[in-house]
Length: 374
View 1 (cartoon, one colour):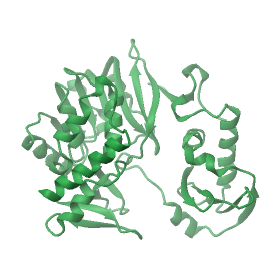
View 2 (view 1 turned 60 degrees about the horizontal axis):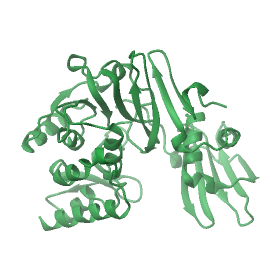
View 3 (view 1 turned 60 degrees about the vertical axis):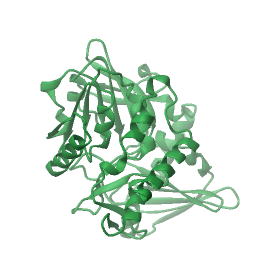
């Protein structure tokens, strides 16, 4: 259809203009795979878009093809397509991931022809389909039976051989192990040890971690650990059943202003993401976001439950911080900030992760430096 083709060309052009296709020769398969397997072949007839106020609104293909096409092929390569909304909290519970991050994660996976791949979180099936364009075996696990069944049908219609299973993705697929590559499409706080056990020594695991970045881990020769670096920023949905807590505006509404202070802090440092990620690592209970404002960026912090803080840049170079709730979350943010400064301002790419059967920790610089904590 002309409208779908137009939107697909627009998204492809944006990827080209921003240089978002992987440039490594070993990943040269990704661009033709993405273009040869259109997103709309895996999108349900009903998707959901933010109404700009307080909720996600349904967009039906039969009623408004133009708006549906815009949602399936967003103008921004960093925008996902929401395909399911939770009845519990009204938040997205499944999506077709944004094209830029899909390409980046496939690049990080270092997938080769002949590989056996385990995917965790089938969703609509698009990512599994891309994997199948390269790998010999793809096993994909999805906890939602309806999503799994629909994805299996779409993959079959596309002529792609993917073994879609319904079950708890945290358990993997032990009967099909070992795998050369493992990739998750949802965020975890702790990498399930089953994923490491089911990956061959020297194999690679790519997964979103926390609410901010994704990591690529290599399983050690003895299979007793998986170690690797942060690859980039990506916001993914958490595993089903994980309490996402309250949004900033909801916490703020419940806790009136109880503290106010002027601080000498350069809030612009948060805009470069390195500090944002460092605070996420050192203080994982905090949720820090930025908002463009006149004079720079405002920084919002909350704990997902009862306490919040907002820092706004002032014309004299200071920042006005207001907050409420029982915890002083700005003081905790400042502690993470000071630790980042003391460690020499490590960049996002300086961070990595070590996973063993007993423990998991994020480090900066080298694994032997130990956990990145104040």
